Length: 400
Image 1 (cartoon, rainbow, N blue to C red):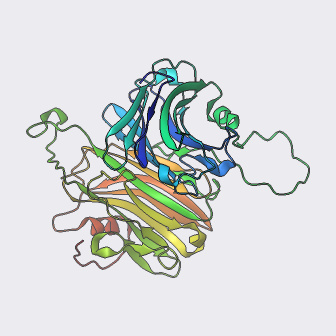
Image 2: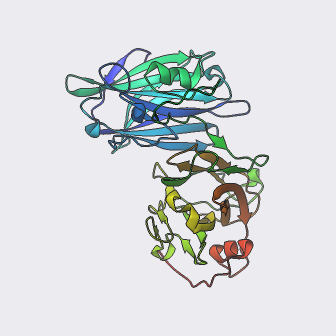
């Protein structure tokens, strides 16, 4: 659809995809949504939904995260139009570039899909971005009791901060001098994101402000393009199937000495408000669930944790991680989100240690592991992780 045009949205709930091409030198980007009142601005910072504030209090808008595949990236939001509060007239969908401008991001587009059927309701391809570092691609808006979508295509050279300020969001500014004492004010939305790499593999959640509330650990994956036969072009034999089932799991050790595992196998989903203070929200057996698999850790109980290993196993559908693209994101309720990618497997691994969380005197430190392990014959993936990190637990076979 052309820029400035609009179309009806005949669905009670929609999935909004922002997509672009990936490659060497292409900046990353992050989707966001702003819920606007009749004033054209947000009512408060709570009406800003993005990676560090992934759900609106009404439940109407959620940030679901990125999905990466060969040659492209999709960042996904979901909007339950039936739950949008009456005071909200528009839901603006935007993106901010990280490490470059939108002129360097090829194939930028926005799609609106029926959340139930997956049918495409609208698509706008942007081709005129240049020096902008934030971009409004489109908006959902009310018109005579119904919802419509408009292709906007408006850029900001001042980044996410400029866009957010334009719509009434309070953002952090560099501190120039110590201000005089003043009454406490609501803490501004944190916009910084921490990406862990081989060269910078760890971060302190405490120093990032992640000391309380829930922290959602998200695993999202996609299979790469498959070749016929034994995958000679990849130089390895990997049998992949449509019924791929990855399991997000965690080994925990509490300060009172208790040890255990949280996983779908054996229905050991955990508990959030009693030991082990972490909860697996379900079992995505296909990778088709938009939000992937999620583990929530109760950071109000940091003092009760000694260490946690978050790991993923292949339950069925693949022989190794060699042909999977995955993104791990840790989203504390307070503080900056932490993410890293898994795309480096070169061994026939069926279990990967994702991250190690350790309590260092009340400071919870996240260490990127991305450690692919190859179980010995007859040894389960869980026992393999146990041996690698010295948990010393007794294991028995289990099923879902």
